[in-house]
Amino acid sequence: MKPCYCGARSLFLLLTLILPLQVALAQRGPQRFRASDPGPRPNPKSSIPAAVPELNANEIALFTESLLRVSELEGTCDTCVQQPQGVLPIDPDPSNPFSPKKLVNSAGMGPVFNADQCFTCHMQPTIGGSARRDNAAYEVAQRMGATNNVPSFEERNGAFREVRFKFDKYGSRDGGVHSLFTVAGRSDVPASCRLEQPDFEKELRQRNLAFRIPLQLFGLGLIESIQDSTIRENMRADRYEKQSLGIEGRPNINPNTGTISRFGWKAQNASLTVFAGEAYNVEMGISNDLFPISRNENPDCNKAYEPFDVPRTDDISYNNPLKIMPAWLMFTEFMRFVDAPQPAPMSSSASRGQHLFKEVGCALCHTPSMKTPGTANPSSQWDEVGAHTVALRGQTVNLYSDLLIHHMGATLADNIVQGNAGPDEFRTTPLWGVGQRIYFLHDGRTSDLMTVIQDHFSFPGFDGGDNPARDRDSGKYGFSEANGTVGRFNRLSESDKQAILEFLRTL
Image 1: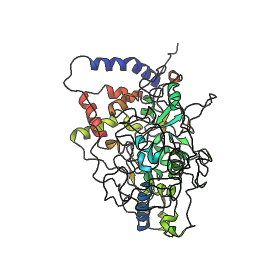
Image 2: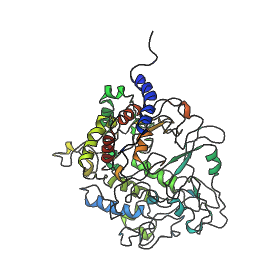
Image 3: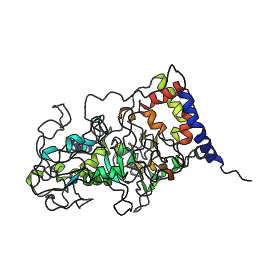
Image 4: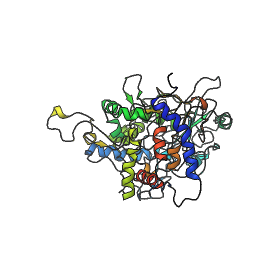
């Protein structure tokens, strides 16, 4: 008679039974030492991120201009911007050279939005980072007289969360972002604008909300320059060890081109250009060349052109070529040219943790590095392969991700489908920069790396534990592909666990 389970599934079943016992035994009795997250490294003194080394003069000019654009505080029209003069709204340093001193060609917010500035969301540890420690929702909600309420799931000392609705009122899948705020009450819209916020509290009670927090934008030009063939080759590497641990992983394929999408929590965006255009339209309500229609066309509230953020050639104030380019496209250039996070020096413990990170299997998904094609110094035109930007060619990209999507089970599932990524599938989040991040996982539920590791474990029938998105479908998910690796981690000594945590905080 054949056994019910074999291979990786047998391992999963054993882990399901043994792992809780291991944890319980580990917690019994007094212990002199228990591994704990050492916490984020201090932020740099400057809020200005570095550019990729060896950019040419034009690329540096674009990057400098892009820093100004992502610093803009948006309004509903060209002349409606309430831009602070010479100081970034959330940066106490008045000497910041990229704080806009006058109106530039941006603004054009639509009636609904999540934020009114790029780095409202992307500011930890510098411009272009992830969610800052204090929740910016409390700044944005009533800016310029707006009458918005801050939803209860936005904790004042927590990550800035955007929301997706899992299902619409008819029970069909939704999955889209529902903007937190409206422009009603602001001084840059007519008094007749009476647009109301969605009833988030009702959706929260019905467990119909899935949360997302902002990801770091550092080094994305390098990630974009990795070829699909490199990702697929890495996917096929270490096949037998991956199978023994239950690790599968697959790319989220762009249906229009058949190429690998790689940006976003579920690898739903195929390029930085799409990522930027969508962010301007969805997060700030700004219509643009890629997404020309406003997400809300209420005639009493929508006073912006449609599309608004397009190349400007119609006004003498835009005679500078850098000003002609639309802001959303400058955001693309920022993401393409901003440098990758730089790791900190490793202690002997962290160095041991780097070895253990690979030994327990973490590196099978969090691939330490991939390379971009080409060379920065081609010997002939036939060697000019890879990215158009020479500085992005032939680079080792220390991203700590395979850029694939994996089944993570009920503990992490958000019940949102994006492209080929199903309700419990997520892209392997790049770990570079994790040493200075404050909030983790797609919903920002924790600031503790130990919790992050444990929440990678899940099995069939589990209700999702501390998952804020758990719902009626939570018990339907299968095993997490990380179960085997989490099991190995939990069998380490406390000092070895600590070494891995210290290693992660050097990234």
